[in-house]
Length: 162
Image (cartoon, rainbow, N blue to C red):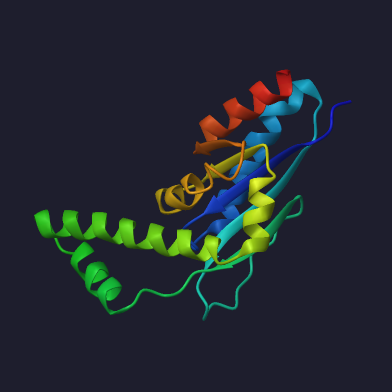
């Protein structure tokens, strides 16, 4: 039997991280089920400093990534994102941009989690807020960098075939 595939999941949103991790885990299991290769998974999720709630999963090592709360500009952008029309569109785009930068900085500041991610076979960003953080690992790892469950499942099944 081959050695287990290493999967790393990063979630940039903190809300309902348990459901997102569970869904990605089930898809990863179904992608390699026919090959009989085990998958070891580590998931990092954005956790605000004031949040005491932790996410757990029976088969996934879950790590909270402490992301700083938005500052004054972040609060203004969040307020603009709720507006209708062009201002709201620009506000939502700016909010995604600022949030993705905060998640990327938080991952960079956590060398232990970054090292775990760099040793994975597949790294998947579960949402747009995590894309920048995953993409910044491109020069540090030979892992396949993916976005979303379908791309992750495809990459895992291709690795399992080899």
